[in-house]
Image 1: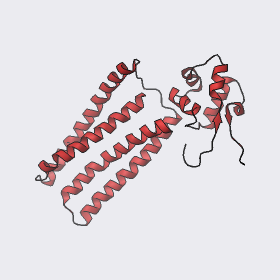
Image 2: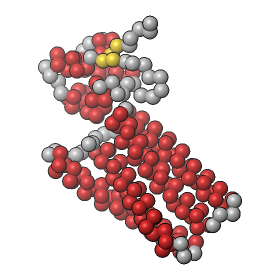
Image 3: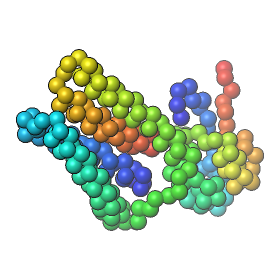
Image 4: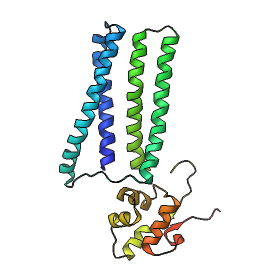
Length: 141
Length: 74
């Protein structure tokens, strides 16, 4: 795997872990008011950013040991830019749909707590789609 | 890449062999792209821009048509 694929894999892992945490924490968060939940989700975002940085560094070190050669980031070329553009397009669509979903929940009188979840989940889903897209485009073209 | 992509073939592997087993990394460095991009081009998974195509041809000192082939429609 290349450096860029490792980073995408770590990003995907982070999104999966967030998904698992959301499911496990759903019961505990159900009793929170909207402000408390929003604060909790903001802290979760900080935690994910820290996780992504640490996990990327660790995975590159472990990956380099497993592959027997140092995994270095190479200069970005036209294919990288094309992969990034296509992945970002997919990610943007998912994020937009998530945001629209959140607004629809609120527009139809749904619980505001679900709107907050939608605002939180949409970028993570977008991030996951971005990571999956990168992995697929790099592998399959 | 993408929908309706023409089936462009190439002879990069052969040209590398004829150039004294030039490595993909060496070709990538000459062309100014990553080794992964050369691998993808060689395997037909990525069609490069005209500029990169010309740079590849220049790296082997051959005309473009000798590197990339576009089959006629029948």
